[in-house]
Image (tube, rainbow, N blue to C red):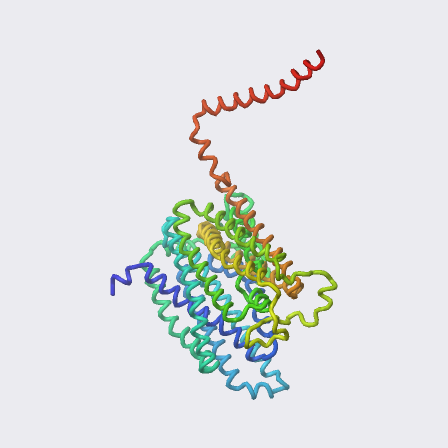
Length: 539
């Protein structure tokens, strides 16, 4: 037993499994809870998703700054307590809402149910913010110290944690879905609440053991408690003032809200003055895409005649492909380094998503963005599904499935490169100075949600299957822009994009000089040739 507790991966990965399992159960169940509480409408799921995104946009940098300003164990403990407490409160609120549903509907002309749903949204949003804080503390900061400056070890830890996320994302929804379907929503909410109560003590114990085994985790703690001195956000002098404001605003004479707003702006200035800025923006571009297995693409595929059973299988295949990319990531880092791995990951994703762009004009595509075509659509959410259980208006599929096959094939194949690129950028963001690591990753969470919100706004602007091709092209452009941003970061750090410099470095200086002289002679000969031909023609 003692040998097991001395084995770091066992404790860290067990903690990740417990945390990810609870998060995935709640994320899957809460959407269905909100739909069940408002049958025939997606209003409350939409409100819940939008509220979460906006909360991270505005609070992400503040959370990251709070992580930097507090001792590591204190930050981990508080974020873990708050997250689990809020999820338990949300689950209890869901259970009580279902139990007293009939009374709430009758109360004040239905305002009782509205108030209950609003409370669930607020508690769930706060729980998500606590989850962001917990993730930054342990899986953005702690793992860097645990890896001890070894990039390959850090890549291995990141890969395993991401693989756990992907695996639990496949299994946890199945488990809680069975409880909701075969038992009841109240039992499902009770199960989630019970899991979070039990998992809190186990996860807290595991993290405490890890903290004790790695004394370096307390180094920042002593610096934060004793000094609170200004820190450098980057090597540029421009970043000195923002960082000073962030860590010394406690002694300022400004008011409470002025200090908070000043810290908010300073965190963003630190991010945009840091060398990793372009890499982070490249990662955020991956969020502004419909080319993934989210509700948007699944709904479009369903409307194009793909039955639910096939969509479920394709979702699992896509998750398996992403899992392969996550597993392969450490080997790529060992062979090529983090920056080159990220470049190849982005490039591979772009190459695979080219199939999605081709699907826009392939046989069977509904793409027709003309005003005449859109004006004839009575219901933008009309389904053309051939499933025997389909409730869609039309029971005939498209003339050809070539378009939707190309679309889904591209999305599935791109999952490999997506997670390779994602892990590469996240490791780059982890390797910043540990005194601003929370700030950088907190602002990054905000930027990710900004791009994610922009995606939903685009979908709202183009909600019809006939205009889905526009969303595909915009998504592909965003991912190409992500590659360009990451490539600019790689060029700045490595000094080159392609490894041709290695060939040049192996050539002796004398030989390079001889090559230049020969090239110059060849150019002179080319210039003399027209003159000789002109003189001959004159004679």
